[in-house]
Length: 371
Image 1 (tube, helix red, strand yellow):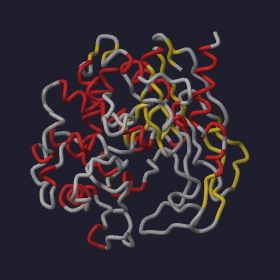
Image 2: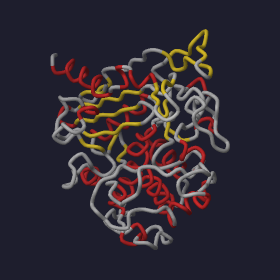
Image 3: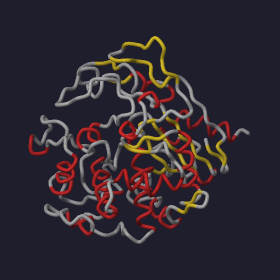
Image 4: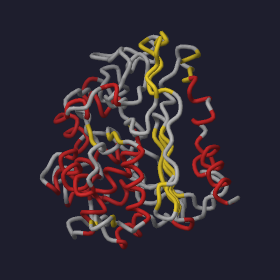
């Protein structure tokens, strides 16, 4: 919890790893530490992709109102030339929520199968189908952010992870925020574990090269791991509570931290402007708005200015400028047994209080408001 420019709470609870595999409990669980790193899942969208995009906007290298094709020349055919960068950012470009490149048995067949990053990027820019009519509807989609990741690489001339780690995190002296950490000198025991049996949902799912071991320090997201080599605009970023506190404070400071100004206040304001068609959508950021639709995320006390994101693995961020407040809750809710049938199942950890994000967020607001 960051309040009025100070880190007022940094606490670890429970275990970073409890299972060795297939529901077998460890005799000595690995305890959670305040510096444990987490798979941020979709929080990657704001702490990686959005940070890069806001920096590029501030530097005059990107105009979000331009067509995507202005930056990615091969992005054409079937109405693609009409799509703007902003439509990807607001999840209104017409793409489906997910697209399973990593499986041969996907609904689009072998033509869209890819466990190779270069091939996947080519499919993203030229082939992945979307609704050809621009309806203005918001359909939250990982595809939008995969394409934005490729766009950043094209504009900067660098791989996404290299650009972010060198141009964003290094100037802030953040050494625990990165992609593919096991390839960069980190050890599995430094991470909160996620799924117990790889991506198999306890044996319910099978595909080529599927991982079956406990995931620890490798991105869980199947599309990021298998199809984009661990580096993607929608998922793949790892970080810890301390580094995220700095990134949240930078947002509260309108793009600056210490002697570093990463992006302009006007770029951030542009990204936090509610969309008239749905006030819970900014550009990539999710907004509290009138706080009814997203009470499960922001709780009942957040101001209308509050914004943030959630991540499938069990991560949530709330940044509330009205209170000069940031809340980061990192859990390993998916590091738990799975109960249910072949088709209908649930991670037990998602039933825990900590996985009900708004509940914990509410308690923090209450503690602060009651002081």
